[in-house]
Image (cartoon, rainbow, N blue to C red; front, side, top):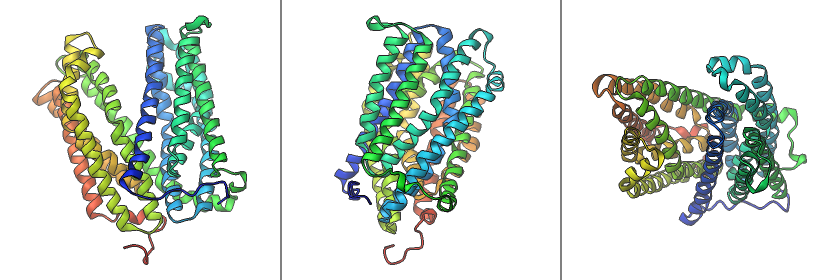
Length: 462
C-alpha cells in the first residue's frame, strides 16, 4: 500500500461498530433530503412537472439497478481483500469499479436515449406531459454516468471503512442541490427561474460534483491510483467474482421492483376506497423509507464487517458479528417504532388533509411499525449476505417471499377476506416475518460463508 494510504482500523468493538453505522444513517438521511427537495420543488412549479418528474425518477431508479448490483460485488471483493491484508488487490478492484461504473453509465445513457420512445409508450405517458418528460429525461441521461460513478465510489469508501468522506460529500451536494433548486428552479434570491430545466441541470451539477469529489478523495487517500488499473488478464479473472455476486443482486432488484409495481396494481384495484388506499400507500412508503434508514445503515455495516472477517479467514468472528449486528439493529428499530407509535396520527395529518387518506396512512404505519424488528432483520441479514458474497440467498429468499407470500396474501386479504387496504398492509407485515425467519435459518443453518473469496482457510477459521 502506498505510504500515504491509511491502514483501515479493523477493530470490531461496539464503539467502532457505532462509528461505522451512524455516519451512514446520516448520509442516507441526506440522500432522502435530496430526493425530497426535488419532489417539493417540482410540486411548486406545476402538477405536470411533478408528474413528469415522477415518471423520470422511476426510470432512473430502474437504470440504477445495474450499478447497485455491481456495487454489491465490489463491496464483497474489496472488504474481503482488506480483511485478508491484500491491499493491492483491493485497490485494483476499486479502480475496476470506478472505470466500470463510468463505462456502464455511458452505455446505460446510450440505451436510454435510443429506447426512450418505447419506454414512454410502455409507461403510457400522457401526451400533455410528454414534451416535459422528454426534456427531463434527456438531461437525466447526461447525468447518468456521473450518477453511476457517484454511487459506486460511495460504496468503495464504505468498503474501506471510510464513512466520513462520503458523508461530507453528500452533505455538500445536498446543500448545492437545495440552493440550485430554489435558485434556478423557483427563482429565489433574484436568480433566474428556469423551472423544471433548472431542477434537472442542478441535479446534473450536484452529482457530477459528487462523483469528482469522491474520486479525488479516493486518490488522496491512496485507494485510487492509475498504477493500480488492472491489466486485462487480471480483469478477466477478477471480474468473475464481481459477476457471481452482482448477477443475483441485480436479479433481486428486478424481482423487488416488479413486485412493488404489482403490489401497486393490487392496491389500485381494491374493491373499496381504492383511491384513498393508493394515496395512503404511496405516502406510507415515503415515511417508511425515512423510518428504516437505521436498519439500512446496520445492514451496510454488516456487509463491511462480515466481509473483513471472511477475508481474514475468521468464520467465527463473521458469525459473531452477524449475530451482534442483528440484535443491535433489531433492538434499535424496535425502540424507534415504539417512540413513533403515539404520533402516527400526527404524521398522517402532515402528509394529507383528506381524512380517508389519513386513515390509510395510519393503517400502513401501524402494521409496519409492528413488523419493524422483522424488517430490520431482513435488511441486516441481507447486508451480511452481501459482505459474504452470498447474494444468491437474497435473491432466493426475498424473491420467493415477495412473489409467493406477499403478493398472493395481499390479493387474498385485500380483495377477498378484508376487502380493503388493511388486508394488503397485513400481508406485507406477514411476508416480512416469514422472510426474516427464513433468512435467520440461512444464517444459523446454511454454509453462507462458502461464497467468500477465502473460503479454503483452515488455520484461522476458528
